[in-house]
Image (cartoon, rainbow, N blue to C red; front, side):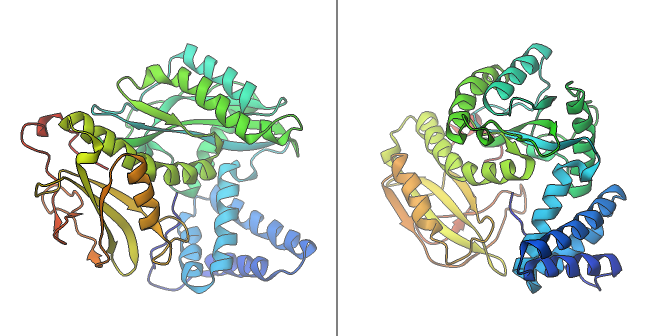
Length: 389
């Protein structure tokens, strides 16, 4: 999940100034004993703001530090995420944390966001407790597979959801999700779905299997991909899928954002090869940077070799601290070549961040150095998803 801030007008306000001061003090600290003081003060204030639903003060402080002090910004962002996914310190007897298990998926059909049958929730509990969580962990699994648009929005809503499902975790019971009024899910060729859960452990105890002496992160990842993936497969009919290791909510979301970029490229190549009935070697990929005030993303326009026009496109967004000095084009080229595409054009022109006025789809680069609308050949256009990542 990219930490990108948009500058807001106006002064900071008293509460935001206090957050900035505490985060700056922590960033400048030179010892662990001083760290502990700043961390305790910062956690207390953040918990108060989460409980009072003061999202504006949290975002105002982040906005200010994003441009004024990158170290203090990282400290504040880390503490905000930690306090939100741990329910703002709502529980005294246990450490509680919200977890996410992302699933990368692609399909020529709609990728479902759907409720989970009770038997599947029970099965998922078994695999999470056997392969991912520590032996003393209590667990609650939400009985819904969320799309990105359906996840809790903002730190305060995340903390509130963590409090509800965290309470269920202490009781070792699962959480039913009321789907009435849930946002609609847009249709993309490739997208991410999220299984949400919460874990409660005795204060100071290990949360994950790899924190125990006989566990490892790699083993947990392999077992979850195999066992958890087999369990989730029936929920995603007609989809290729790749489960991501369950972790704390914000860390898992960032891992999914990072992994989804190469996954979307591979999915697009597979989709085009299948739909157009051609080998990947018959495709051309044009990669170019797209700017607003700063470099925001790379876009990849796919075309048929020896033919004009862009038939499909993929957006490769910048994440975290990535900027124009990061060699994203080399990463994209490596993924394309691994996928079987050898005709690759890298453009260094700074294209504007433009979208179609009619449908809102991004414009993609062509080999002629122009940005155009992606259009599938007429005979296959009815088979493609309406919106494409």
